[in-house]
Image 1: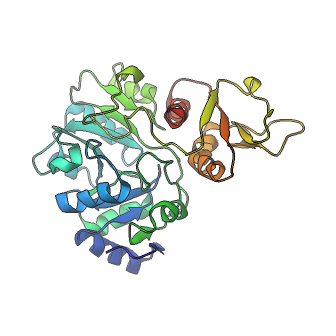
Image 2 (image 1 turned 90 degrees about the vertical axis):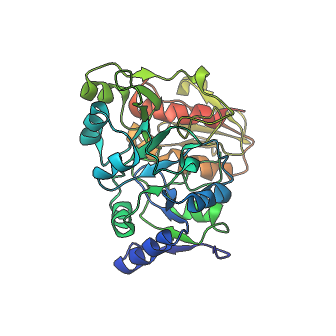
Image 3 (image 1 turned 60 degrees about the vertical axis):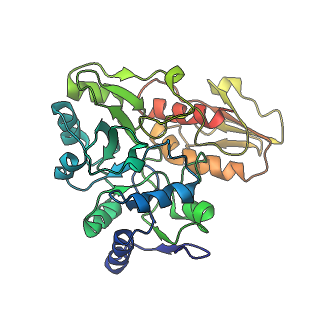
Length: 330
């Protein structure tokens, strides 16, 4: 059962063994991944996965991503095809999630009652060690209250879910900082990018040898069962309202009780309400700092956040702007 305040565990061999035993017993453990921190449970247990939905306040219409440690587990949980295996060999372990027809072994609660399952093999070394010790596939959505800004550190998890869960595994700050790329391969000849991430549509297309379609934002449903997680129009949202701007030129720190957030550090004299994601505006750094910055400014007392969007339409630029658009949605 959760304690009043969750305990943060260092990734020692003893702690990993203990946390693996808790997962095997049906408990929840917040885990580090290279994308964001996840809230893990035994993916083969409906009861354990139900605890994820309860702790997060997550609707059961929003499916979970299942994390595996070995490629042979893919066929146990899903029905792979040659296209899926190409992408798995090219990008796993890494920030890529594949949506495939599911095997009966996967509980319905994991897939929102649908016939497909979202699977990925994470690259974070600490999470991989835990997966090996647990010897189970682990369902793990982001370890935060549903709809709020994703966590990229153990402290973020503790701040939001510390009273709801008992165990947090600390693997340091998330290296990438935005959730995985999700590609729908249920029809392998017509791959569809469902959610942009660090792996771009162009990279997927090069491996597959065919065009990867982009799911139109207008087709994203706001109710009913989803194909994959992260498909809702409003998500990753701080309590503070957000206004998005296409360039830094559109932004001037005119209102003292509103924050202005730039991709890179602005030149010249700056007011106290000017902030930036990365010193030079490098998109790797912007993505890594994105959610932590939104969290920090959400608690700074500003009435509104004005945020510069990233230039470009694929890879990290697309992922950053996707998260910002949904964070700004009302």
